[in-house]
Length: 245
Image (spheres, rainbow, N blue to C red):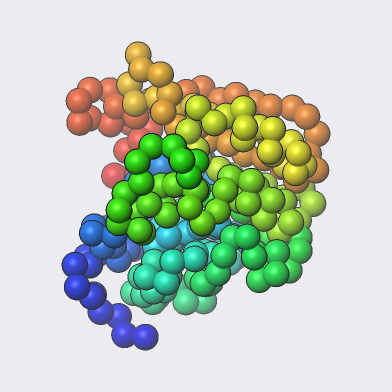
């Protein structure tokens, strides 16, 4: 595979270890939610990590840069995204640390061995299939709407593939929080940590970060809110730190 950009693609800096990621703004680019999830996830030395619906590989690449994990795998159904993610891995010389697998989250239990990962992450589509207008650009529609998989598909796959005591990390929208909690409990991914993300200190949250533990006991810690902006166009110090500026 040749390390070269295709039409309309670009290299975007990640401010970590000199890494760059290949993106096509006409298709889909990663957002703040993926970066904030990478800051919320805890990966210990020598742990193995799977990212469900990895897109162009942003979360595995960021986690490789930020943690001492042993190996990172991204699962993605869209061939174009898989191709870009694999080329980003090569571009950053991470072939020994990151694998990008082309496959369906609904088939993850057949692609990987049961109970084979220490940590599983996901930044899944937020909108149910009928909620809101779908973007006519299919890659964006798939990334934003539950066209090819549902929230339950993601939670079910994580439950199958996590080791006992393994950790599941998710970023989603607060309006679906009750549904998320119910599904995590149903699949024995007991919610353990939660953090709300607010655009401004006086605005309601527009993201929620969650950690669940496989077969964990019932006890949830709600962390202090994460505020994104202190002023128009000016991030809070915590956000600059997460981004690596």
